[in-house]
Length: 340
Image (cartoon, rainbow, N blue to C red; front, side, top):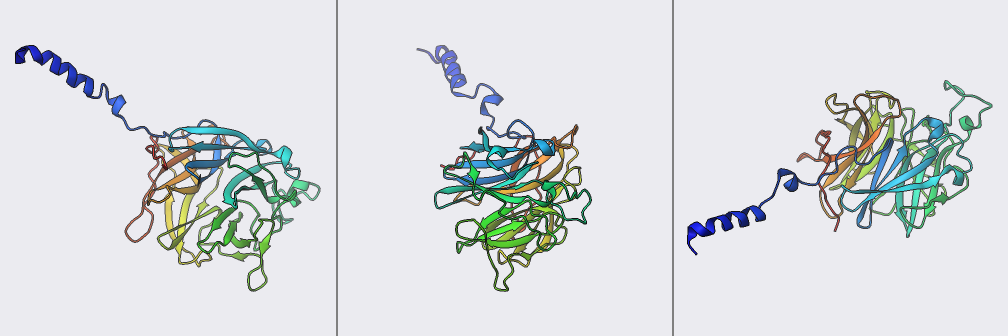
């Protein structure tokens, strides 16, 4: 067969082996928000070969009475696990549950959370006849799998008292390299650190006999989160007001989990071309790599309500000196990145 005769067949073969459209070759990405619904305060973590996110169900305070969770094999496709913990199983939670934080220990999965709205008498809104003002705080639930169902671990709050002026909310548990489980928490611009005991039923005192030490960095408001990278401990937190566009994420660095912490600066804040009120973050590291992601909530534009918050994820990168580059919020999200 002559070359001239072969040309149409060669063209057809090339066309069939080439991408048909730009859309077909486009890299699969998560998009932002990464799943539907109003969700805030997302805690991201890896269990086995899956990424998990535990967020607050963002609604009116009295309607935040359960938790959903989301899992993914690749950061792009997310499966919803409904009502992994419900207030029906937390008898002392009367008004709201929020800001969950999960960790695995000895084959069990623990979910820490804030509930009710404990206040001190000098705080505006305190009502001596209102149980939710003087009973509540941080609770813990336990399950046999990361998707629950979770059950109350203690039948009462793990922490309900006030220490160093910190409202007992917004907790995070960090396992250090020596196996110590440090407990970070605090609202009202105070951040405390404690040490959980072996069965997560209470706290071990420090050498001075105190249960909690204050480590509040400059600018801290709420939402602490810690991670370790290349021997450096990073403490993150939210600044500004959670109900408005001033919300943002800042961080500090230290040589030990206990600090002292030196504030470095802000790395995530409102971008009026994408979203506002970005904050209450967590961080996910792909195991065995130096690939990192920030998970956070933000307010779509236009914002129609105080509780209209969505969960998003974007890449987090570092400078040569270990400092964190400002996070670029996107609508595209991140590319697929399976653990295995």
